[in-house]
Length: 588
Image (cartoon, rainbow, N blue to C red; front, side, top):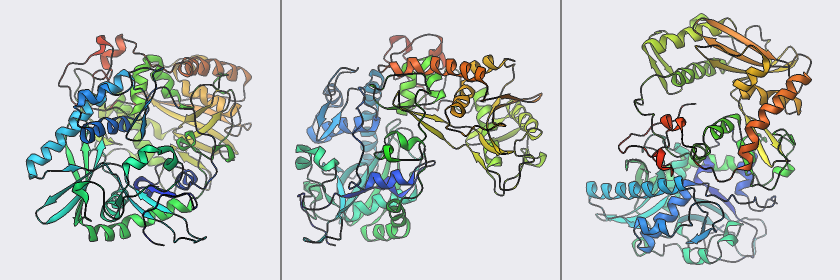
């Protein structure tokens, strides 16, 4: 196999690996990762595109392309985007389709573009190096010898924005990876960084003009049109001596260097850390239903994704395919725009009057649940005991949630209450126990991927038990309907049994473990009860129906605005946040 630049269809479809392919995400599907890379796999028809842009970083890339490669200002570049709202037509920016953004996403992209460019200017002020943007993204391409019938074309790609410059006598290629939050907040895995560094060190530039003339052709499996071993940009005429991979915040302009070394050392780094991840991506493995099922191109031929036609009570498959969970339904019911911003992953602020480190009920709930997830996931499996409680009841944390003082003591009391009702007590050796695993079902009547994540899914006494854990300092309804209305995840769990997504046996149960400082209470619902199923259908449909119908996600100003983390992006005038509020995360 040789490196060559060629643009023809006289070969098999390409195998295209992204740097992110080197790491299988939690609950990711190995088969989806493999088939996404192999364009020879026969795929389902393309999904109906949503009317609103669904990728903040893709929209940001379009704006930055117009700024860095077309000479526009940020404001002028944003004005070139399709107007906010559905019904507007998508447009093309250097070969990439840009869908109309929600007004809130447009507000974010204005801020993000300026923050990204400010970070770039800040690095230049610190090191004195003038980075020239490179419009041709880099790809390491392997094409088979002409006439070969046994080899496939391979391409290795890295996501980010490319720059080239000189640092003394060294030619440098730099990949800046935009990040929605602060730089270093979520560091890329080493394997992904190694693949990106390898692409910088050994790749060539894609001819962006040729690509932009027929982008669908290349997206569907024709190898990228390369300019040759050397790039087409004036700043990238020769191979690099050094490479850098940098995270660049689109929130506060901070940057973090993930990798910096010589091109030769980058190849060695890839061989040691990244290559095996790409090999495993091509091997595939078991099919694992979950979030990957939303966009999977071989979904129709998969026998592992259970079909549950009508589970949401919606009979309309004309809408774009989406995923839905109870958490989505609750967020949408509170404010459609807030739900949309959460789905996009936009960074949020803490509520006014609350510091990022201030304890709260949601923080306490997150810490308690994370502590129990860690205990229940131990191997060998064993029940929780008094020795598993925090050593210092006045200061402890788990899952990134830190508690102190009274909140910490309340949380420790809740953990102590759990010991007496831990579902692993008496569980036979070899019994199945799935901790925090996603349950997925395909509602084919609504064309919606339905997702649930129980705290524990246990095979107990020959039957499956679905258990969620919650914390409270108040009272819960005593009747089953009131309980399902208050905790709709229980209603969805009942329907997962009713539709055969979870096997229903005589002893199957849907349980809610309620922890409070005064003790623990386990509420149980029989998913085989016709009455419980009827009530569950009403609860789920009331939550999912309005969400399924709406594709505009308008703001719903009101009391919910008081603690909304996305106020700075919201287009509703009443929701505008005061300037200067710091970044934060929305609680569970």
